[in-house]
Length: 199
Image 1 (cartoon, helix red, strand yellow):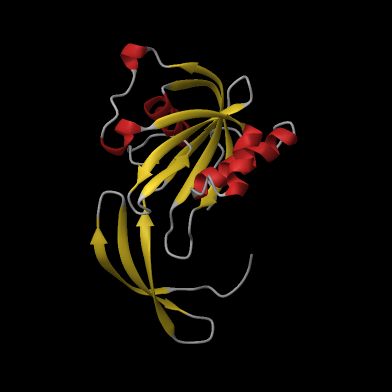
Image 2: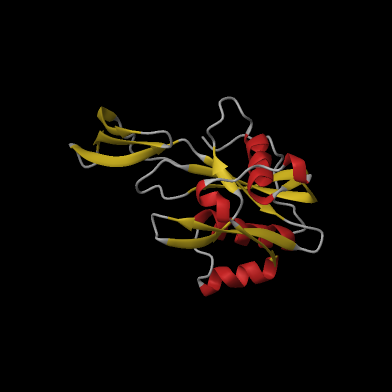
């Protein structure tokens, strides 16, 4: 991909928190001059399409305050553990949110969630060969996660939920559709769990 090389002239930090930072960049524009661009710099995330031996995926019903309601999502979480490999983080989130382990994990897709205002990137993995986390080793869920609803849904039913508007979380929509397409191609599009992320 070629084109004009945008340059950042200046950067002003408006807010800094644990998950994201709000900044304003002054950026050169191809028509001459410069413009201000406000955006969120995000730590990034990982998500998991967990597929069982019966062809069902694990969905999580969780309250999301920004939209004021519960959404169906994939097990997912922030890339907020220093030095943690992405696949390791995905397996950790799968155990914490869905009480599951996976014997196999592959890269399904990489996704910029909303590049018009954030640099957030999420890597979605496909996890298979699932087994339950033993009861004494299960994560103690708190806050919004304390009332997570777990549901196993046939992959084709999850695809139908996307088209019906019942699944609207961007990572879940992308993960469900990508998993269905990868399955139809006998998993040929999958990448190794340690495949490099896009530049």
